[in-house]
Image (cartoon, rainbow, N blue to C red):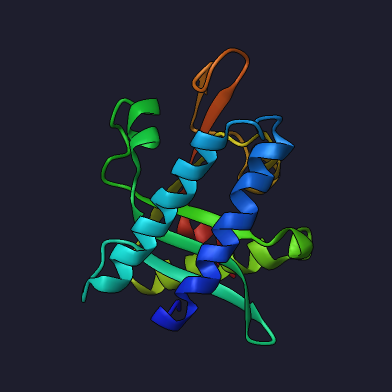
Length: 174
């Protein structure tokens, strides 16, 4: 579980990983978009920590007390609503999964997903959705979650896609 003392470390993760994701997709020059994404993530995290019963729940991964990754679960976002014509409005979204580049490919993201899915199962939640417009993340999610529920072609511009997955919690629990 993420605590207020982890907030600044998670802010740093956003400041490192979001520009990295844009750069990997060939959009590293979209400075305003990158900054807007970072600020939006920071505001959502801050709001969740300020509320006694937040709509969005965060977890983080630590190695030797250093926060190296983060994940969230909350109401589905605007992109999912738009891409699915509001068909998944009642399904919560697994989101904001970011892992420091030096720890990517080492199972940190998978461990965060597993921890969150275990939490969801204990809460009696049976489904979740997730989405991605990042090409690198889409490759990973296709391997992990299979065929997307919906693919919105040219969503972010010419030759870009936004993918949405709908998953059963039990498919990802031990």
